Image (cartoon, rainbow, N blue to C red; front, side):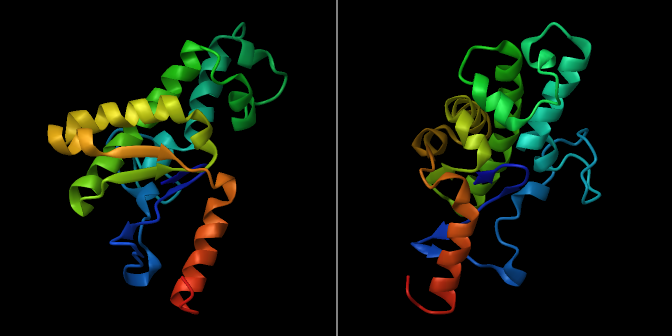
Length: 184
């Protein structure tokens, strides 16, 4: 699951990259997970991207900064960016932790559905938000525990990708090599 400004998933089943119809597989960023959430740019309300993407976390922190001008991130002299949040993480800032836990909660809702439908056992988290791995993984696991059968939830392994932020480019190259050239 790649979590950055957008959210998507590459799905590997039985060692094969799942393509699906119209190449729309893994488009989980526009799955509604928060019925009363913000309106998404796609027109739906409460899409995963509106509550769990790096953009959503930064917007939450910007809103807090507007009402708490003494907060350290409010005093940067520029709008808060993901890089600013990465720079202070994992320093224990309760506001940042709460925003990340909330994003992790919604990611957990989406991942629980993927696990229940596809019976996957391993979820890899990548993208810009992977910098906050410990906090996100804990929140995702907590949500899996609330939404899945106990034995299924405890058997799910969640790891942080070591492929870095170019994971989408690498995935696209792997798709091309596999699908068109039969090399992988």
